[in-house]
Image 1 (cartoon, one colour):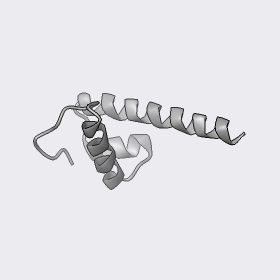
Image 2: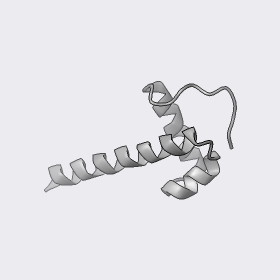
Image 3: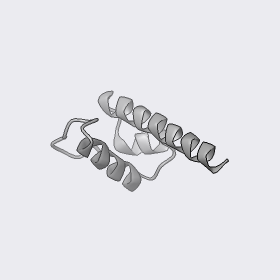
Image 4: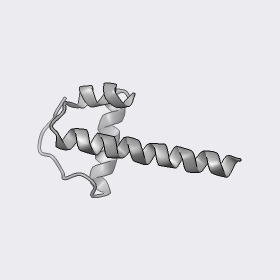
Length: 65
């Protein structure tokens, strides 16, 4: 049961990351992204940093808050 739960959580996190990536590429502001995916703005910043480290997003030059 726990294995299935962890697999589901992993899938939900991947879907959320994909949604974040699409919204960032569309030029949506970080605060709006946070509202749409149910996260705090600081959490979005941390997640974007991680996605950039993983190469899933290009490294940006400025803030989009």
